[in-house]
Image (cartoon, rainbow, N blue to C red):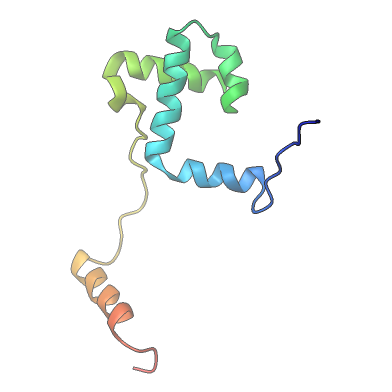
Length: 104
């Protein structure tokens, strides 16, 4: 019997990769696994290829783990412009969208 190669039909590899990167807990797990592999003797250049990231990213993960532990593997808060609406205004918009009909 020959072995059948598994095929993904619902999404491309790029689409799946985007989904995985959206989840912060997943990314922390990936980074922690890379740190574990370094601790187990893997070479960072091999992990670069395995995780499809730069050599510098792997180094940064190891340094962040050494300095801060698992918390160091979390993403930094993203900067951006402050919202123009207050929290109260956002809450009003949310309830309006969820509770009222479009004709209203």
